[in-house]
Length: 71
Image 1 (spheres, rainbow, N blue to C red):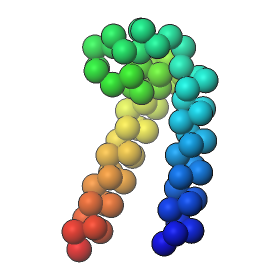
Image 2: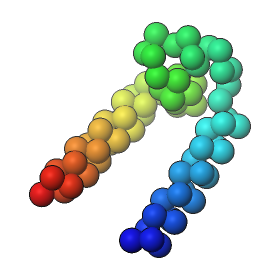
Image 3: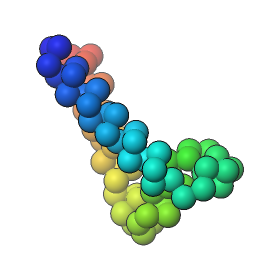
C-alpha cells in the first residue's frame, strides 16, 4: 500500500507540474463560466468532443472507484 501511495504521489506531482506550466492564462481560467479552471485548460488544448470524452472517462472511473470502495 505504501508503494502504491508513493506511485500515486509521483503521478500527481507530475500532472500538477504539467498543468501548472501548460495553463494559458490563470485569470481567464479562474473566470471561466464552468467554474472549473481545469475544464478551461482542457478546452484550450483539445476539441470539445475530446474534452467531453475525457471528462466522461474521469467521472466513470470515479464512479467505479466509489463502488469498489463501498463494496
